[in-house]
Image (cartoon, rainbow, N blue to C red; front, side, top):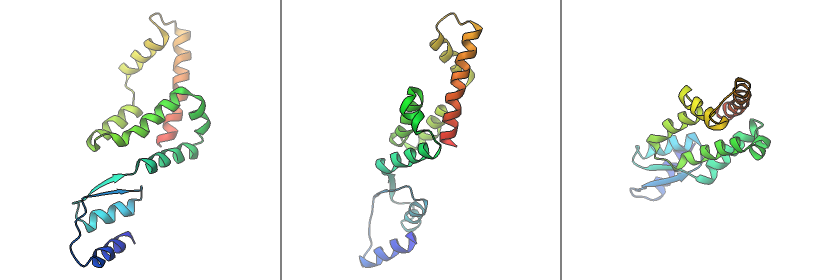
Length: 143
């Protein structure tokens, strides 16, 4: 449908239309139609408002709105997801992966930073349990 609309708009102008950029909603069909009609020449950008709405709807759909409002770590994580759109496109997958996947060294550093220098086993277990709860919420959000 979007494809035919764009073709019709092009015919209404009765001349070659040169569009350099589009700011559009997160509708896959529209992005695909623009790429097809303009043969990948136009830059397509998402709308910050609609990106925020899409993330917020995902938070609500996953039942994380209360956690977002009450847990600082969840709030911070979601805010980082919202900032992804401001990165150059080629950096987004790497940064997203770093938000989702925390390797063993980063875990060790983070736990030491949270717990302090001396870390008794009962405290490590408690910290790991709390981190696992937050990780489960983050997994819910991005799955």
